[in-house]
Figure 1 (cartoon, rainbow, N blue to C red):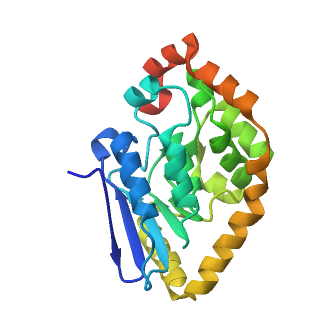
Figure 2: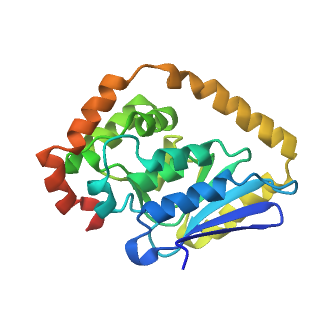
Length: 244
């Protein structure tokens, strides 16, 4: 059975992470399925894409078994997140529970995040001897700013959705019982907007932020890879706080 399912209902492309027994941790199959969902071009009637997750956790990050065994080089999660970020239409993440590490990045690569007040967002990498890639840190800095990015990365503790809403990192927060109502309103409003305007505005935003892609970062990539292969990281895989 597919761990990610998707389809189009009217103006909405609906994508579901469906691995609740593993807290929707992203393995290679899920990453490939998510990328496929967002590389398929939108039809004429589509206005918005929506990512949801089954179960109480939105996404606990990368599957630990695959993360520890991955060879050197760019992680496949980067290509998947890039496909979501550059999808021609707005993408909304409806976050009902914790979004940690890769799950945090998955949510923040969407254009709008509608989160339950019960959800937490964070990057626990420093607590297990890792560091984010240039690509992942760039997105966090872009949406959270330098002060909040330092807090998220250097301390590694998850922050509640309400705090991230106050800081302008996510666009909407709702009581758990009201999440579907608030998300439905956002999706409906996007669906009612002019499709050419949506596409043009998203393209403008992406182009305005593209300057960071031209900054050299080979030395930083090397440092991050050294961290991933360190003894601290190998020990950290065994005690990842996001899996408690």
